[in-house]
Length: 72
Image (cartoon, rainbow, N blue to C red; front, side):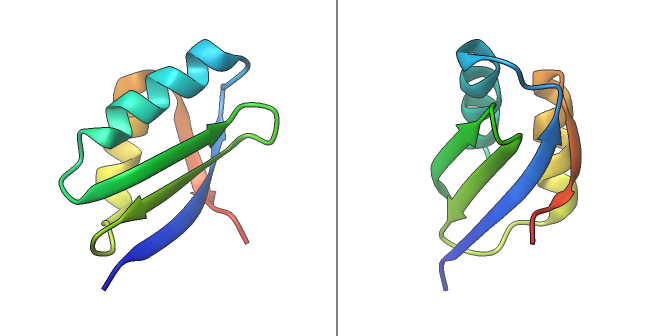
């Protein structure tokens, strides 16, 4: 079952930020697509199966940003 979740991320301010987060999240197993939006402060992750929030948090941390939580 595929899953698409939008997360709120703090610290993104430009295209480089979007790229860094997208590249890091793309390394997670099952991730199909990542769309980061620095202006909105969000990243949308589509995956083959639901991801654990901690996996996503670790990838965002590795990229140098902070996962605030899931967007409503």
